[in-house]
Image (tube, rainbow, N blue to C red):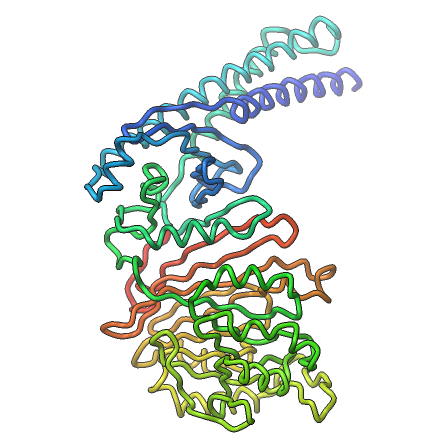
Length: 492
């Protein structure tokens, strides 16, 4: 019995050594290849969620694609860009994208084959050395050297075969997540803004990363270009976290800002002074009250120039109301105040209860029925208030595209259906100053790119998240126009 146990342990040690040698070689060895547009380095990072990473160290940001089934990331780093190719793009000349893609595919394939061969040899060597060491040190407990060597070879072959099958990306490479690092606020956002300024569209997102420091683009040539299209920033749930205001200000930069509620915790006059700069942050700033805001706060924001939308119309500083539907960035927009908005005459008491009544959802439905034909976008804080309407619109799509902006959950959410887009920007305040220790949310917001002619139509949504501790940011772009128009969209 003891001899069998020792033999089993010996077998496991050889297997572990062979696997370690194989995986270790994959993680340590990289390959560099020269393309006509520059040079790339290709490597494998085991023990990660499967993905294809394209990273540009020079600007410290990258794009991450799905489709890798192995628990590893296949990483492509853009090490250098050919000056002639960059100048060609900068002058607006065409680039042979198909040739670049073929070069890149061949380079990746050849490097992977080389890495797998090195990994195989490393696994065999380390497994064989382990078998020899066991035979020398513990001759009675070990396998015969021949059988130990065969076990090392077999284990290494199986490991390499599994990597070869699971590592290559499958399906269409699309819908990347952009990420960046560093203490300064979201370089990913700045990258996205530079992408949207580009004048050249290549036909796949990956092409942009391979040829791109001169012209970084993400819009495939078969889709509507996003260049020059109007955009607006969607944010919510600041909860008095004034440290996040510079983040929001940098993201907005002259764009319309739609703030879907919960700027404060109680809406008191003191809190109102902390967040009043939001009123002038956007061009314009549009606000809808949340359950942590108050009537006092909304009046102050209206007096400071914000467009405060309520179910009774645009709120004026004197408490009266203007038109129900206003134009914001060319979009016809209306808003609905949260039914649990706090009130000064009730000492800003919290009236919110988990699980809104059916009456609140029914009241929103009646209000929406009266304006449906006149709006392109509706802003409401609590998704549960709009749930009945959203369900009806998904079952029976409206006659024209409508965007519903909601909040409250502190979680990014996006769903596109025929003639309907629901956008929840998460929380720009990371849950607020009172929730940082418990909730540990990232800062988040969304940027919507849309068209106005021949009709208003959302084209893409950039979902941006920022770690409040490190400042690291990611930005995921989702094209929504085809889904809203009811076209079949292939998934990556």
